[in-house]
Length: 305
Image: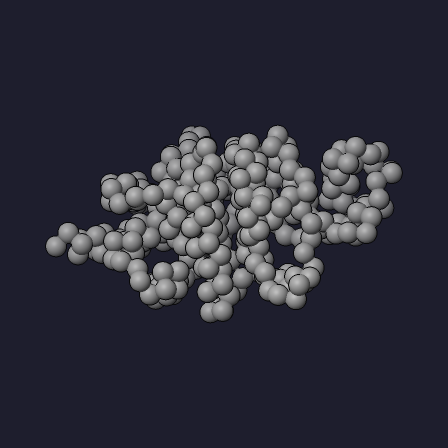
């Protein structure tokens, strides 16, 4: 007897496999995670285990599934991403093979961090190109419009947004190259596992937001999700650049932390209007928007002196 969630998963899979629900050979359905964007379920089909992704509430307005589909096509042979066995650009359903004994990156383990920053460098250095861009400021405006007639829960939202937008000129003047960028390169999206060859491998998953951007946005996003303080953020920057980061690039990353904080804060406000709250995570994103505007502004000023 299926629970409500299990029945939903079984019905979706029956449609994907083109089989009547009573004939589909699935078992062991279980919630894998309820992320900020989607719901994921693990299940067994015949002799293998898979993960089904189901788009979350309001996601149809947030994610361009055609762009996601194109991103997966662009990276399907680079061997650092999850390769879907099924992806539908219309429904957003995605099926991937389950990796046994995989774990996510720990944002506080120096070994994990160094290996994951190495994966990001490799991705960025490949100079992959896709026809779409992830526009941070454009998406800030887009998410805000999704609020409709609702106002921000933050009384100083207007001044905070104005400050973040003051960083835009510096970003545009100094972001000299756009490459294919993950955008959601947070610790939970790095899967670490031992392959059949006995070696450790890292797979970067969930490419929904990926597009052309300044690659250093990925560093900012890793930091935003990890709830790092300034010392930890500078450490991540030094790891990615192997101790050779210029003040100009560091200032850009501070700018992206500020802009990214506002971006995801606006995203959380929209999800709240959909009935999905993110509590302290949402508040922390807004704090990053305010705090790293000041850090960015201060460092930019020294570059001008």
